[in-house]
Amino acid sequence: MTIFHLPDLGEGLAEATIHEWHVKTGDTVKTDQLMVSVETAKAVVEVPSPYDGVIKQLFGKAGDVIKTGEALIEIETQSATATVAGKLETSDIILEPETFTQANTTSAWQSNAEKLSGIRLSMSQNMRRAADEVVPASIFDEADISAWPEKSDITARLIQALCYACQKEPELNAWFDGRQQKRLIHKEVHLGLALDTPQGLLVPVIKNAQTKSASELRDTINQFKTTHLTPDHFQGGTITLSNIGTMAGYFATPVVLPPTVAIVASGKINKQTKKLPLSLTFDHRTVTGGEASRFLGAMLESLAKP
Image (cartoon, rainbow, N blue to C red; front, top):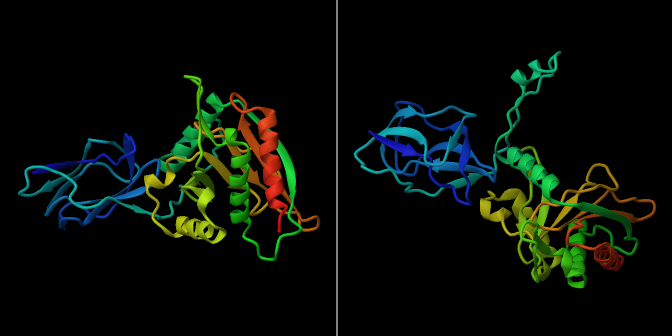
């Protein structure tokens, strides 16, 4: 018998939640055959069998949290050691939350409540961290887009305007460590694009966004929607863009996620006035009001062009 332990899934992830078993006790498995889907704070990861064998025991059920290095599966095999022979694959599976039932008392409802895990748990933790660390301030304005051609790619135009503003006021394209009082201003714009998904908030990063054309930006965004996102897709963001106006909403106070110091949110276009609402939240520990105002002004300048 050989015990297969949850492997290191990378990016310092200490645990994962069992999402779905693809095997059961008594099944015969082959090397690289998918055994279980686990959900991390970054993505859903498919774990393959490292060797041929027969499943003797599954340690845990769907919803259980397994720490890295803990027993996951017992397999009867000739192999003496357990290593992952195949590639850990990520999945774009849509995770449906459990039904939330409101009870009649203030304490009994928790027995029916959904326990946060994976991406939604990571979102909760990141928002808490932002609330604890960042000193937020926000400013608002409207961009005149009356000169835009019909069927303009709104998101691509916003990204290009944001990159232009980063050239004018690079202090907002930065990381800040409040504990050590250190700031790193970036020359390259690695843009975190906030996406609303059934799993929770995802912020994949468009690397070197300042070098991409509108069509290249659109291709990258489309790839985010169709590609299996891995932890690498979420690393290295230097500033964030969120589109809150796809359904409703003009202005907002978006949340800055450390170590970045700024986030821009675009609202619902006013079709009568041809105005695009913009909201900029910045970390006032390191960004001045003047810098933020000039940054937003640069975006308005760029967006006003045909």
